[in-house]
Length: 292
Image (cartoon, rainbow, N blue to C red):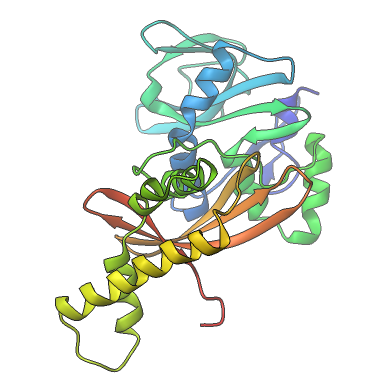
């Protein structure tokens, strides 16, 4: 049995004689929407790995949205390849159910805007595969080990490869951690928004607010941040691997991000971080107070 047919699993599937099982996920499923968005935000890493595969890369596949008139279907392609213009080519890896424009084992070219997922296997670990993870997250926890066994691998949170910039909440978190690693206090401050931190903190108090009060409180927070680093040193995030399994939307400008970190010594931590979309892009406000 091929890896793709294993991936489709035994749960929530329609059994089809002599064909890979097909998983059906409602298009409105928030987990699946986030999985597709995440796959596209990290696609650069897949392309880079595909162009220069390393010995620990043993498998590459990519998922695309095939549209056939009023019908459409998300299908995995094996042997993916991008040409010099960025166009995608691959071999249809599972028998289509809803579309007739492609067939199993057919070599096709497709617009890269129709990519909905990607996956690679690195050192026996699933990297990417965000729609697979969304399927798994919908399975009762007691059945997840069986799901993992059915596709021949244990699925952890993986390693996410967001770009280190202010375009996404996750990228802002990575930028802040990098600033800590290189011991650059100015770069760390650039990843923050003390005015918004002050605004949130003061809004929880029963008092009237104006910009002057918020500005003064923001300056206190900024000086406190600098003092803490001067006295305690920079946090050390060097050598760790990150995954961001969940975004919780508070409003269009505020997300709570779940970050999982694996440290070189084998340690693992999970933290919830407040992020905010400021005029300069996404910034990190600080950890969530879980006591709230």
